[in-house]
Image (cartoon, rainbow over all chains, first blue to last red; front, side, top):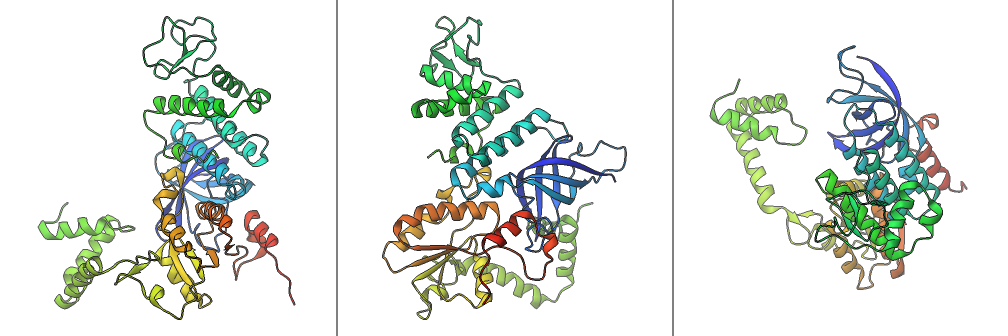
Length: 253
Length: 199
């Protein structure tokens, strides 16, 4: 029964029994891991606030599988959290800001859905840590940070929307039509009926968010931000084949 | 191996209860089989009575056997202070302190977007209706000291502060009986920010 250590972000917590919790973690080296935190809900718990959603921690886990049966974290059983040390209590810092906290929930849910248990996802791990840090530092509006995370997470998963060329024939843009099932922007020849006609600024904002051009993203106007959020959410949920529970509850006020 | 008829049905039903696994369900089932007839009948009638008679108070949302709970109908309780809690069991926890003489409002949970629970799924609208008549002057937010509870308190404070009421949140910090060195940074940080003068 090996012990292993890793860095992790807490994605989700669920109550278990009287005072325990099942925590879903995205670890740096072992991918998504589900583990039990014993006694976490007691006020005297040694884990304190470290096992709350959005926390960035260093964690020691006890794998329940025998040595050599599987690499740690790769099986579907629950590991046991034996020790934690906080690297950044991002969730706790954001709970006092409702808008940012709802964005954290959407980021955590998306990450959980885009990862598999036991399969390392280093780029997504670095992306979520960066997004949480950006939300805490408050350098950009929370809605933009969320949309930037979602669009980059999709790109990482292989679902990057076509924005500067036609999704079907690769004709260089800019194009005025956007079709989610077809994969993004579309030229007039390929455009299926019922395609959206977003503002040019909205597509430019998506390009800026995908490329990390924060000067352009911060300068965008409110209608473009609203439209971008809708397109990014539609694109993500189309590929996930299921709605995200937290996205409709994100407070963008 | 499966048991026959009623015994297996009982094990299956007990196994559906939270925290009761198949082994525990089997143990409880055989304990009940070995128990006196009168004890089992008392348990069965209590289960039926709790489902038929217990409802939620129309004012605060606490569990009650009548339309309004004992706390809401008690004229000795201070009607100007409302303590907002997540679940009926939290009312009992606060009552055990004997520190609070006001009334309660049970939300029925906490906002948790990742589980699909938003403000509209809680009894927030009913709380706002209670505050409308101007009798209440202070609202104590006693939601759980976890992130869902904090975010729910933040949401409520944002909605209620413009109404001119005093909105307070339960203090959080070091637990009695613990060692300082084992406190995590968030708990210790809150204890520092909420420190008080010692006279």
